[in-house]
Image 1 (cartoon, rainbow, N blue to C red):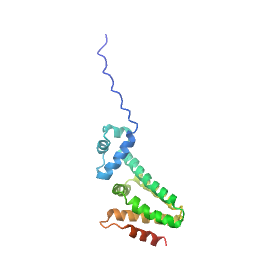
Image 2 (image 1 turned 135 degrees about the horizontal axis):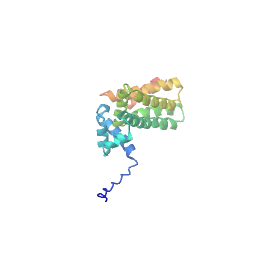
Image 3 (image 1 turned 180 degrees about the horizontal axis):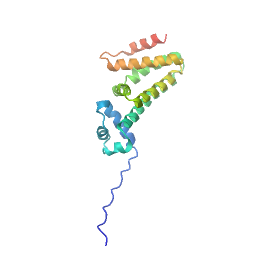
Image 4 (image 1 turned 30 degrees about the vertical axis):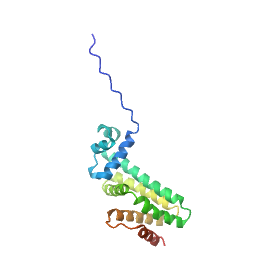
Length: 187
């Protein structure tokens, strides 16, 4: 004697890009609400997936943040690589640095907010500090194509300072003020 037939299994939804969408959604939530308000629930909502997807793909919220900020940092580092890789001499490299700051790093309010959120979170979270360290090392390598290692490190710090200053200022520096600061340092 057999019991009732088992209910048919619901087919699993094939969604190979879900993990990437969750990372993108995390960046969107961080940009909109900040790290402090970023939760598994908010990320799942933004990605339009069930809440369990976040814990299926990531062991912790910290892991999601690390992946998200790593993606953000890699995109910024690629900009350094592209701009400085295209520069053929020191003069072109100086102009590339100015364009990198004025157009790329300060060009997107979203990316600017993400950078500031990363800095703040990295101050308290060693794993995120490692993300910023990797980002700075890659930025310096790009700068070292045209500048000695000491100058590259100091110029990287100047770039970070100009970005933070602009992000937090009600009167951010103009492109010409950025040009003046970079050229004055690199005299």
